[in-house]
Figure 1 (cartoon, rainbow, N blue to C red):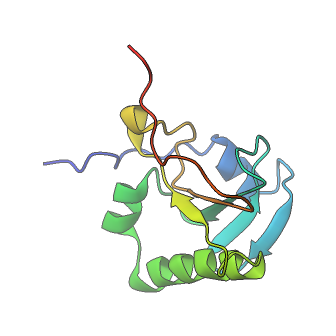
Figure 2: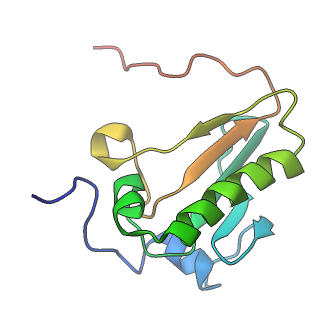
Length: 128
C-alpha cells in the first residue's frame, strides 16, 4: 500500500531551484542536510523555512525514505536555526503542511519556523 504524500519528486519546484542556486534566497543557515532561509511572504515577524537537501515531497516521504543521519541532521538544523534566531527563551512554532488538505503549496518537504511575537491560535478553519 502506498504511503500518502510519497510520490514522484518534481525537480522544477521552487525549493529545488533554490537548492540548485537558480533562484536566490535570504539564506540564514546551511549545512550538509538542510538549508534555512527567510520566507518571501512572512506570516510572523520571524518566518523562516527549513528544507532538507534531499528530494522529498512531504514529511511522510522524508520519514519513509530519509536516512538516519539525514533525518537527525535536519532536526538538529531546525533547532540550531531557532537558537541562532534567539527564539529558545521566548518560544516559537514549527509547522509543516502536507498534501492538499494540509495546505502544502510547494511539493518539497519543509518546516516553517515562526517567532518574534506572541502567536495566535494554531489552527483556524475556514468559515463555511
